[in-house]
Each structure stands twice: as structure tokens, then as C-alpha cells.
Image 1 (cartoon, rainbow, N blue to C red):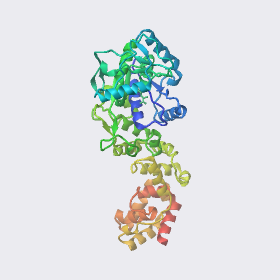
Image 2 (image 1 turned 30 degrees about the vertical axis):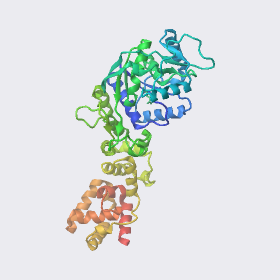
Image 3 (image 1 turned 180 degrees about the vertical axis):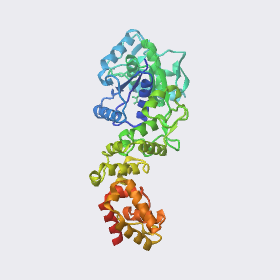
Image 4 (image 1 turned 60 degrees about the vertical axis):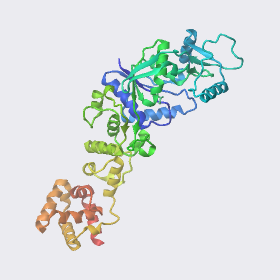
Length: 460
Ligand code: GLU
């Protein structure tokens, strides 16, 4: 069974690169009826694990990634790791090394001075003597002295490292705490992870982990090392480019559908399709289609996708989503039909929910100023608006269609082109020449408010 995992080190929040890794693993498991696990890599005990885990779960919940089974915490598994360390010691596949930090540093300096790559000289590998007293030893793995470690990465292709380059690396520190590569290997093996999709910053760890799989007799999973996300100028993504926490995107008014769609396309493709709903992602995702070139974070593309999903959202969902944003109090006093009309009119004009909320305010708050310079014929505009006030009745406001009929009747009566009516009307109602449709604005504001705004404008 395909079993994948997301294994974050708890760092406070889940950033979008992390979410992309999680998403790829999640989708692969879901695409073939497999399992997706979450493992918190918290052996670095001083960090605030609880909060960080909650932040990850909160982000998962928002975007809808469900985890199978219990969440695993490495900090609770130290006994398990120690057992396997003991096993390797007992089998002679690992050994205690009593070299002090200072000795190791002196050795490295000498090697550097000789133009050699600094590395541990394996002096305790076959040590049979009496260990120096007062030194708490580290445990090192006996790496093969020759040959190579080879694996086929699903993204990078064939990877080959000379065994001698791997050194007899430390698997347990002198305080007994196992090292990163060791715990990852034990956990992935015991969790029966079949496929590891992770950032290519971990590529250099993989040969070491493979040596451990081999030493422990575990089955080696498939690896996929995904290139980083770069900004548009080809550099590492910084906060300013958008390397923010996942929940920051929610607060900015991005829809989870847009964010997931955006992330899945950062490094993965399926034919030339750009728009994927979650169902389609689960159906089509295959790590074989991961790209080996770094992907580029384009804020415009995220906005474009968000606009797309906003347009697709019915007014009812928009209302629910807008609960997290500040709307003017007047919004709640509108009738459901007025609310729907306003949101339907706005949804194709904005890129985020935040923008939508501020557009709602712009419509519902009376204009503070008027773009009078846009009115070419002011005298005619005043005339038209006066006639409009006299002609419009409360009944015309019963629907957008009835307003349409009333406005057309007025244009016919006065022999006006559409612009000669709509432009002054729009400026009187909203203060500006642009914005949502005039009929929709009138309907949203209702008879009383519309007339108040027209009178206020004429009184100027
Ligand atoms: N804990 C590692 C990280 O957050 C990931 C380890 C892995 O995926 O193997 O970068």
C-alpha cells in the first residue's frame, strides 16, 4: 500500500513550501487509496512543539488535508530509537567513539592544512582497548569502506555517492539522543512509509539514510526530492516574495481552493491543465510527473487563480467566507437578495476576499467625494438626475430587472444614450466613474438610500 508522510520540524507555523510538500504526499496517498501520516520531528526539545503542532493542524484543517491515524511525535519515541542503536552496537554495525570535540577539531584542522576533506578518521572503528575515562562516547555507524550508495530518485534520477564519502557518521550523541538521519530512518521504516516526497535540501541525507536501512535490514522506500520554490528573479523565496505562513494567505483573503491549486502546480503538471479542484488533484496526482526544475512563485498567478475561484463561488459561500473579514454594519441589514446581488456583482471584479470586503464598504458607505471631472456635461447630468428622482418609485426597486426596465424607460423618454444616464448616476451613487453595475448598485442600496445619495449629490 502506498504510505506517505509529512514530517515537519515544529518551527512555529506551516509555510507554503511545507504545505506543498504535505500536499504532494497527501495527494499521492489519496490518488491510490493509500495512507498519509503526520510525524512531528521534535527531538530538538527546546522548541515549542505544542503550539507549532497546533499551527500545522490548523492549516491542515483549513485547506482540508486529513491525516490517517495518530500523529507521531519523535520526542515520545526515544526508547524505540535507543533499542535500534543497541541492536546495531550488538551486531557490530555501530561502535562507540570516544573522541572529544577538541580532538575532532584538531584532526579537521590538520586535514584542511593538508588540503584534505575534513572527516573523522575512524580511529575507534575497531578499537579494542580501554576507553579513555570521563568521556561520554557518541555512537557511529560503520559505513562501508568502499563501493557506492546508489538509488533512483523519482525526481532527480540516478543518484550515486561513494561510500567512503559518507564517513562513519554519528547516530547517537554523547547524551544518548539519536541524530536526525537515524530517527527519520527508524520512523519511516516502522511507519512502513513506501514513498518519501520531500524538499531537495534533504537529498544529501538520503545516502546516509540508505546505509541505515541496509544496516537495519529495512526495506528502502522510493524517494522523490522536489526542487525548491524560487521567486520570479530565480532566488530563494523570502517573506517579501510570499514565503509566509499558510494562515497568512487565509487572512489576506485567498481561498483554500486557489492556494492548493497554486501549490500543486509549483513543481507538478498534468498535461497543460492549470485549474484543478481537489477531486481532480487526487485523481491525477502522480509523483512521476514532478518536475526536476525549480518552480517559480508567481504572485500574479495566485491572484489569477483566486479570482477564478471567487468567480466560481456562489454568493452563499462568499457570505460564509467573508465572516472572517471586516464588513460594514450595513451589510447585515441588507435583505438576502440585496446581499447576493452585491456579492455576485463584486466577485468578478476582485482578486481576494479582503478586497471584496473593502469593495462592500465602498458601496455601502456614502461617497466622501465625487469624481466630478469625469462629468462632461454637468448641467445635463443634473437635469437627468432630477428627472430620475421624480420618476423612480419604490416599486422599481423590487428587483434588478425592474430597475432595468425603469432606467430604459427613462432613457427613451429623455432621448438619452446609456452613458448620459449611467455615468452621472454612478458618480452620484458611488462617487466614482468605475465600479459594479448601476442597476445592481441601486438594488443593493434600496429605494431610500439611493434617493438619499442622489439628493445629497444634487445638494452639492
Ligand atoms: N523534518 C524535516 C523538515 O522539516 C523533514 C524530514 C523529511 O521529510 O525527511 O525539513
